[in-house]
Length: 305
Image: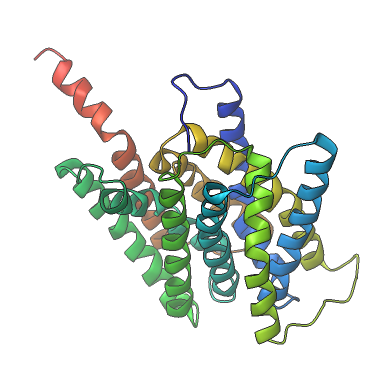
């Protein structure tokens, strides 16, 4: 994606939207899968986003490019949308929303690793390696807490780790494409490319269409995720990805786990054990050191003895 020299004023606004959407998405995924099969829940969510996005393209008269580079962009985006979202929905059967957000919070580290391989970026220095260790130590505490208190947590952790890796891979691959496409067009094109995979999985798992019931919070969660978690969130994601490095874009995951844990505890009565809080703190400290450690090092070196 192209990256202009100066950032538009709307980039910070889109960044904040991303934080709000991604903080509420894990709880929305858990709720939407309560009474609806995960494959049907994610299919309906993406279908809502695709239909609304396509209507916006028509109303705003935004062209949907279909040339080779655009199709590569949509295909790379599909890796994160299908792999990341579908596996997250299955993981919601085994993990609390706060834990899912914490594990997804490791995506900047995964993006950094993948960027070394795909984008030929410099390897991790001692500071980033230490940050990597601290974050994964925190992840270990979080996982052990879930293993001790919830059956099937090992499956859930494996699913969400794979989802996070595919999401990170998608973001890094997108950075290899030099093309300037409207974020809404990117969202609609990516959703259109993803839809056959969601339809196929729903068919393979024999998922049934849910019965409409205004008292069913699963359906309201699907509607919310379709409008905000997918359409608005993806537009914000693709927009800031045009101007910021992949590892910086995933910086929102430094903030969202804290809000996701709070929302899960307040709205879904998810337990906050001392071990979970300690693990979450280590994950956030590790991520913060990974992203901002070099600034602290520069300030320390510049300060007089």
